[in-house]
Length: 64
Image (cartoon, rainbow, N blue to C red):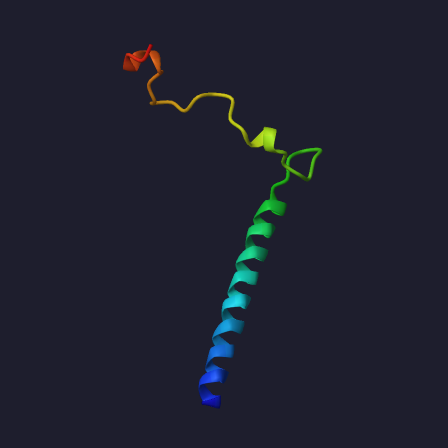
């Protein structure tokens, strides 16, 4: 029984370590290429003002 508890705790620790490593890798990717003059990206800077190409307008579908 104690053997199974040890295996379970080892699995939990390895899972948490994996999540932590992935989080650090994603933060490293964000910090490698900051915008000039600003280390943080605001929500407005992430929005693309152009509509995606290849998608039809609402008017071209016959919606009125």
